[in-house]
Amino acid sequence: MSTTGHATTAPVEPRVLHVGGASPYDVVIGHGVADRLVGLLGERPTRVALVVAESLRELAGPVSEALSAAYRLTEVVVPDGEPSKTPAVAARCWDALGEAGFTRSDAVVTFGGGATTDLGGWVAACWLRGVAVVHVPTTLLAMVDAAVGGKTGVNTEAGKNLVGAFHEPAGVLCDLSLLATLPRADLVAGMGEVVKCGFIADERILELVEGTDVERVLDTDGPVLRELVERAVAVKVDVVVGDLKEAGGSELTGAHPGREALNYGHTMGHAIERAEHYGMRHGDAVAIGCCYVAEVARLAGVLDDATAARHRAAFGRVGLPTGYDGADFADLLVGMRLDKKTRGDQLRLVVLDAVGRPRILAGPSEEHLRAADALMREHA
Image (cartoon, rainbow, N blue to C red):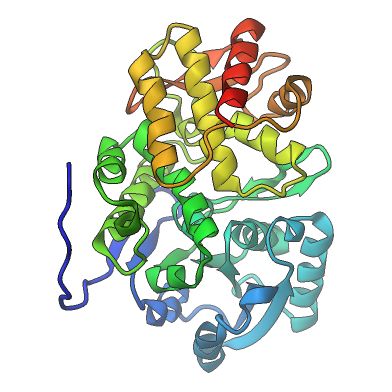
């Protein structure tokens, strides 16, 4: 499939995806949609805390001004990236809310990447046992993953996101204009979660990636990336609505694993991040993890050779890594066993029967895990 160049047209109306359930909210996707923020928050809050990554304070200026005009604003500056996701940083945020007199009717707004939304969401979930939060993700990764679905948390020495809570936002504002500020490496890393969504639920995502010039795929003003964001968010919304708190995950052959499907590639991905002391971009680690688990599934006789190979081709096409030769297998296995899908001593992996057909593989053999590890190192 190929696509043609696009002409300049009138501005496209923002896409609004509604997330149903007990605490419904909207995800607004479009260019220049910052003016929708106050509408998502509503009139109930008197005070709003803006949790913003340190390097993004200037970029957050328009958001800060809009919030200041409507509410009593408290700006809470946190470190960039994963170093912000600690209990100590969260405690500093709670101190700021306490000093400002935040009540249950007040709200938190996050402005930053996935680490900021994870942290700010947890701060909101815990303050007075839960206050409203609206996320303004600034990275592709955060738009299609961290900001939607209500998962919040911080890291500990034991692993990533092991301490947290489910706390659905009151709204999510995906301003695609912010993507133009990203370094290319961060934009590419965000595609890790996008391509993952293609494999677990929406083959059209794969077709767009495979059939479009990479520069058009990564054009932050173009229609291809916009469609990819919309489709990836729609995948997450559909899965989350059906299984908010990750209660699904049957080992029955052919059974859909519910929300656990979104963790495709994450068991090895998180193990690699842990081994690299969170110095590797999450989307890069997820891409490697998806290629790894596809090989495990192939070796186990679950997935065909062509679809396993398609993983390396699709992720690699946009510049994502498809292999890793850092930490040794023993260390990575320890990290995989810390995965939240593990039950007792049994490792459980999200695998595919085919594109769009995820399932759980419980108790994969160490022989297959080791063989897939060897292949992962060959492609590093």
